[in-house]
Image 1 (cartoon, chains in turn green, brown):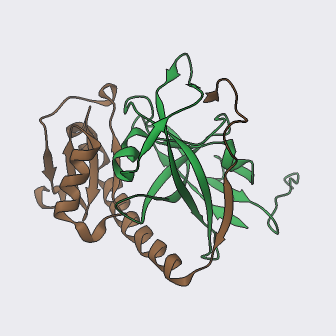
Image 2: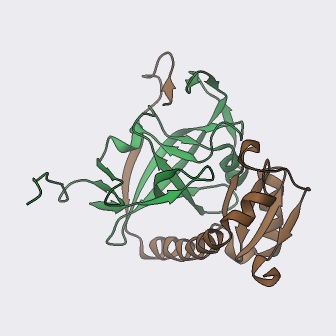
Length: 145
Length: 114
């Protein structure tokens, strides 16, 4: 299984490794969203703008989320995040996801290790490559000749 | 870094499944094509968008820019103007430290203004 991402430039001019995914909402069936690949995140976190898009009932989070130097206010929503494989088949992760409530805290939704741990994650800035690999797809490291 | 504090075992793990329903996959393809068009338009107008949308939510729909103070408002504007593209909008919040403030509830077509 191979899922390709891309490098995009943030508003602050920083390159971000991104993978596109659809998210299920109440009003719309799905919406396409960029997710920052963040192996430093214990779990996937949806940005505050996504809460408006989802229009789903939410509940307070059981445990607090901590960012760098602060506690992140969040709620929990039940939804699914769907990634597209390169062969056109979709891979869906369903369950409870945290959704940030303050727009200024998170510039973009974050794909955390609750999803990333299902894959080998390749984030290669010099080669401008981003891949999530699993099953028959794998990577190897060889010295340059 | 985002860290979960406290008991992390209380939350059930995510369920992973394969979606091979052709209708569902075709809908995903259609939405991604719309998103790609809106994102490409955004990339061509990135600097101008950053100037007018600071401290607000911006949304690209129908390859046009919509700006409003909240995500709900900007999505409502986009849905009224381009309901056929719902699901393929590119929208996000521009933090106040990323530029200058602007007026409220704007929509613009930079292509026509150029």
